[in-house]
Image (cartoon, rainbow, N blue to C red):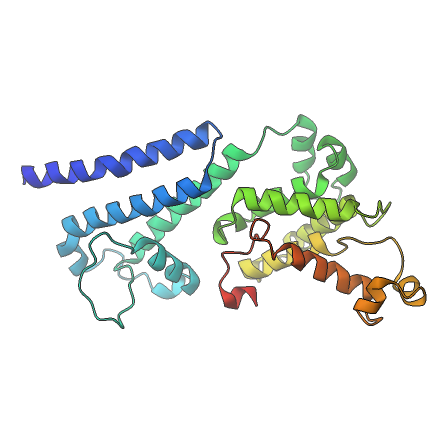
Length: 301
């Protein structure tokens, strides 16, 4: 027994060391997501190997929470957890058609909480200290009286980036869809540049931030958010943020009658609206900007 404990302690030293190294990176705001991902994969594999060695008999017994139905956990959550945390160093023999899975919902939930906390800590550590003016504005983000102009002023003309970042983390969509901070930051910077492209006095990034915050209020105040899936909430916020991307400041009729390039591309049909969507989704073709890169094909469609 003592020898078994000694072996387990020795095995745990490596993952513990790696976890502490990751925490140090986060605390020092020097987050290397590729390195963290590699360390998490390695740590998860080692911890699971130790767990399987020491608790194989327990896994065969009845779970303390056997009354908890698996239907209570979304299928996409269990599928992702299973595919992420069952890459073992020593794989037990199994049939080729047998799908790897957790033997207990409890372990799946614990792993999910761990990943969620890592994302939250990473986002908190990476975000720069916000000016007091921005913090004061964001306190009213759930209210109709929200002052988007004050937010834009306090954030040095980055109202859209600041607001979208805030809402994504509030809804915890960064954890749900595994959105990397660097990717989200690059995407939002590109989005703001597009809104500034034609120096539009109205359909600009402030307007986009205003519409996005209004949508958030509609979802929250009406209670609609409780009837939507996380994917639908993500799609709604995304739609609001990009809805006037690269607006030229002119009407569809102007494009049609002047036979502009946009009118020719979109065959005189919903010229501006078609461009907003096309140009925004074109940004996502770059992996550095694709905040939806970790969606499944079904979610993407």
